[in-house]
Length: 243
Image (cartoon, rainbow, N blue to C red; front, side, top):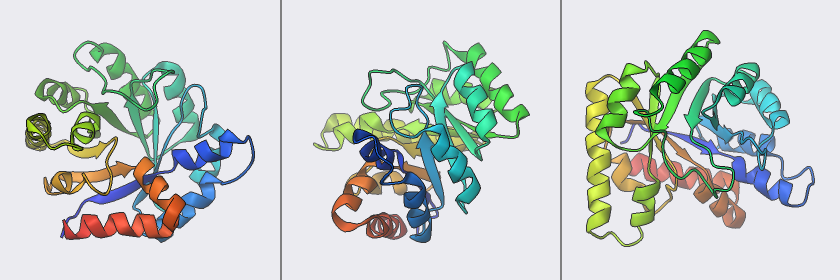
């Protein structure tokens, strides 16, 4: 039985709401349902253009959820200061491109070390635990450890894209993740993973065993459109349990 936890990303509940500029569906209600179905936490990404989750959502989530709130924000001082005002349990710093469909890659900690070091210190000084989204590369893991981050989140977007065909490139990327997980564990880092994970490609990741939290959103919300959110969360938890 896996000990890996599930955080449900509810951004796309807000996406549906915002398409019609209305007040429903409400991501706060979705968070409640996800928690009741067994999710260990709620993840949201406050983008600079507020295209899905907004600050109103986060303020109410902060007051109402019973598990923990993981807030993803762009790795810049403006968004980090916003995070400090909103007071999530965890803040995950990510690279952000305003025209991207979803996050495309991890932070390059080798080239951005000094900037990220400053942001990590700001969050820690506000009693917020920090995670850094990085690609599954040894040099990135090594730099994360030097930055004294609480967690790393390995970016699985390349893995999930390649998982559709399971060719040689897929297994090379899976091996990259395995090596990154092993190295991070040896350095004492706690490891989360996310981006593009779904009901069909998640099992090899769960079997790595050292993963602390899976951050999954789009696939669960997509499944919820057809079968309901409670069912979608419980179905993912069942896969995690038996993997």
